[in-house]
Every structure is written in structure tokens, then in C-alpha cells.
Amino acid sequence: MTGRSSWGLRGGVLSLVPVFGPPPPLDEQFEHELEVLLPLRDETSTPQCSRIAVLLTIMLMWGICGLLTITDYLPLGHAARTDVKISILEESPWFRFPYPGQWGVPTVSASGVLGMLAGVLACTVESISYYPTTARMCGAPPPPVHAINRGIGTEGLGTVLAGLWGSGNGTNTFGENVGAIGVT
Image: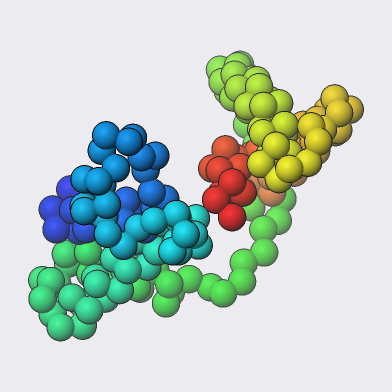
């Protein structure tokens, strides 16, 4: 589903995330107006909804798109139809086992090494900040330096193995996953 192709879907997503999301901080002068505008949202009614606003919005909008697909309201080929790319799921194998060298012999060039080095440095700097952030979100004490070093070393080993198996992606700490920990 692309927002560019359907203003209705874009509007639905943009309007539902705040509805399911946490209530905004109330300023005393606007407290009465917000109670009128958002009568179903308060801090005690549904705290679980405030933690999964995006997931609820995706599920609801996918369900709406599914109903629009079943009733043939959306024309064939429309990006919001839930059956547009179903063949990808039907034709792909259930299990696929990677093996070293499946994409051919690896090549090494100076430009590739320098580009990868820049990526490695950026990921390392990000990872150094994600470990204490994750600990804080979980209510744990900050990890000691040797634990962060071990984590970065393990990410490096995972990246080397991913390269050997030809997966095309490295293994590093992913900021969105850190954010997901804060949501759950």
C-alpha cells in the first residue's frame, strides 16, 4: 500500500495513529478543549492501546483494505488491494537454506572496502549508544565497557558470516528494535 496512490488510506493512517496513541501532555489552558475533541482518550482507560498504536493502525487499515478488496471496490492492480502481490507468497519456497558462495566468488575492490569501512564505523558508533539506551528502557543498569565491546565484536562476527553466506546485509544493532523495546 502506498500513500501516494490513495489519499483515503493516507488520511486513515494519519488519523488513527493519534487516536490509538498515548494522550498528549495537557496544558491547563487547553485541557477543556482536548477533553471535548478526544473524549475516548484518557490516561487510565486503555494504556495498552497507547503502546501499540502503530500496530493497531496497520491491522485496522489492512482489514479495511481487505474488505475493499473482497467487495471489489478497489480496481484490479490498485496498490491498496490486499491481493496485488499475493503471488509472491504463493510462489516462494517455505524454507531456503543459504550456503557459502551461492552468488559466486566474492570480489574485493578499494572502493568497496572504503565504502564498507564507512558503514562499519557508522554502525559501531550507533551500537555504542544503543546498548546503554536499551538497558535504560529495560530498567537495567548500564552495561560495562567490556560487555559493549563483546557485543560489537559479536556484531562484527555476524557480519562476516552474513557476507560469507551472501545474505547481502550485515548484523548490527537496529535502532528501530531499540524503539520497539520501549513500546513493549
